[in-house]
Length: 341
Image 1 (cartoon, one colour):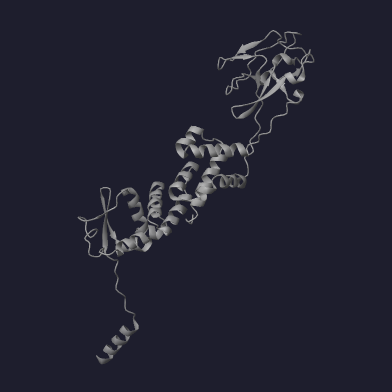
Image 2 (spheres, one colour):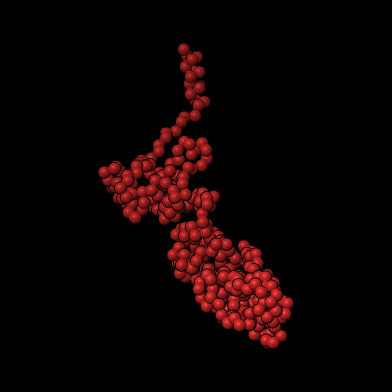
């Protein structure tokens, strides 16, 4: 028995004592109409705001938050956002096994919102990383960046809006991002778009055909506006893709004129100054105007719009766009400098 006792004593001495386990006291929060009863330690660990709140003089003796009948009321917050934050602060066993949180985009936005407002920097970084892996639209990035002071999303979102093929219209930009931002983005697009006027000093450089002559109303671009099968001067057939040349009887400078309308450069052609490829005379010398079959607007024969094939667009380099965004929005970006993201 003595031997057994000595053995037990030796075994007990060799085994380290398991320390006491305490998850801390619970606290009850009320968000909207929902009560959340959680352990206090997670909030004090990840947020200095909550740590300071619970250390305030008189906090220990207060009954507020100790039970469901006396919860701490968090006014101005949404229960759905708080529930999402609780999921991250108190992960489920499945979250621990898989190493990931099963949260929706809306839930991660809720986590981002509260972690930013309560200075939970580690959870804020986690939410930004999770949302970056999801499909955020450029407008969503800008909106979330401004709400939560995220520099990289603001630059990425604004840059994407500048170069995306289906650019939002000014009224859409105003509704989503504000009028000031809309004007700035349109200005950046204009700065990065080629503005050089087409060559019009020598009209022979342009390939003018019946099929390229359209309605002169801005925004219509209907082609062809003419329906001519035969030249009225020589009676020879003319196809829509046959070239038309400046006649020798009309000064070259009056054949094509350039105008800057609607924010873009546009060419207008004097049809009466163009000649048939067979006889070099105007194919329809008595034609002074015609009605557009699409918009029903009268187009003078001396001012037909030249609609040229659009070349494939060459979007500006990403670093060029980003540099321009940083230049135009530098003050706003600088105001986010105190945040890590």
